[in-house]
Amino acid sequence: MHVQSTAISDIAYDDRHGKLLVRFNDGDLYVYVGVPGEVHRCFVEAPSKGRYFSEAIRDRYPFNRMSA
Image (cartoon, rainbow, N blue to C red; front, side):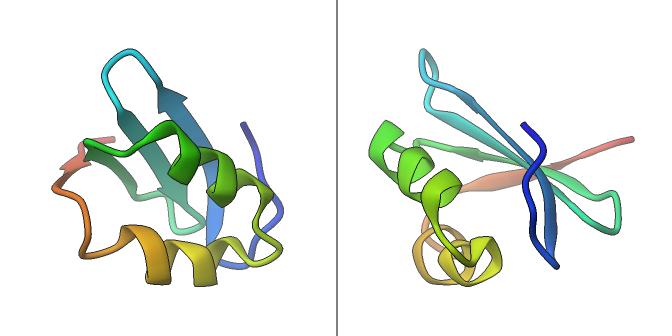
């Protein structure tokens, strides 16, 4: 889903596998694994997506950068 943010353009979530996909405004796409559904929900609802990402997701879950 497209989101309004100065840092993040899209957020997607695979609840079956706990994978959170985050596309940044520079086009980089990352997948974070083991992310609970509640974290995804709070991320989508956060007034500042970039701040929530920095505080609750970055450096807390394993991730891989996806090739374009």
